[in-house]
Amino acid sequence: MSSHRRRNLIRRGAPALLSAAALITGGLAVASQSSAFANTTTAEPAATTVHTHRLCSQPSKPGYMACQAEVRTDLKSQKSLGRQDTPKGFGPADLQAAYNLPKDGGKDATVAIVDANDDPNAEKDLAAYRSQYGLPECSTGNGCFKKIDQDGGTNYPAPDAGWAGEISLDVDMVSAACPQCKILLVEAKSANMDDLGAAVNQAVKQGAKYVSNSYGGSEEAADTTSDDQYFKHPGVAITVSSGDSGYGTEYPAASQYVTAVGGTSLKKDSSTRGWSESVWGKSAGGDGAGSGCSQFDAKPSWQKDSGCAKRAVADVAAVADPATGLAVYDTYQASGWNVYGGTSASAPFIAGVYALAGTPGNDVPAAYPYAHPDKLNDVTDGANGSCSDYLCKAGKGYDGPTGLGTPNGVAAFTQ
Image (cartoon, rainbow, N blue to C red; front, side, top):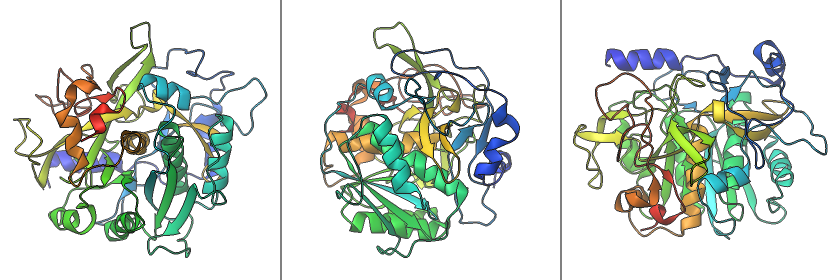
């Protein structure tokens, strides 16, 4: 393992799982804001540096993954909202405006979320999020929401606070991108790649054409075997978070069969678009989005960058910086409304965008943006670490931290 990868893994050894009690202590009590830093009507500049906590601890064994979600600990959790209050963080209308997404579309499409462990409150928390923003009901009762274990049954794994927060972020981001989509939550019995991979296969077996994975770990020589076992599903758009440790590659984002999703800082401005984006880097919240050149995975035929002989990460991106983060409702890991970030936000969001774009052809949907780079918002500013080239620095066209760019409508996500 290179010295760079060792440093990257050390950074990923962040504080362990958060409980609701932990959120109420320490940095969370530092700041309480009466209005969101950004919502559909007003926007205040985000702080240059914010305090965050990773929801999942560093994997303790080879082959295990960590979720890629981060929570703002310098904003007070909102247990309940008054009639005139809005949650802090970006909501669905903000994201639909920023990325030029249709409010309708994706009807009857199923987006699968693959995570480890159980979130006992997933359905009721999802209901609260969707009710707050006026999104259609998505419940077991009306057939929109379904939760299964990795074998397709209801023998759910043990609950885990960190992964429960991850699940809340995932289902809320799919809802924000594609309010008409159905959501299938597949819970793996552990964070081992074999269990998570079995959950991916189960999601595809259930008929999902869009599968989001918000986790990652150190690259290993066995990754190419995992590629064929778990991620080689032609005709299925599989998205994976690029990582939250800054410059450096992780698996399964490095798989040649997935869309690796990087992260940006998103702000309202006075431009024609009305929004601006830069690379999510360490200067803001957390360590920044992952990127780099894979050690083991072959370069896909559709990827043409010349500075990496193997698979380059990422392909596309969306908002991930906790400093410009997302409103999420979670009552298992937290105590209500909080601001979350991480590439765990961008991966399920992009899965929802694929669903809006329509059923993929019988190929690798990760290739689609490469055929339509002009249909994306090119991100040209920022860096996620120290390197000499595009693999950590944004620039015109393709770069590692943001890939080809962020959604500008859905045209870049069609065949």
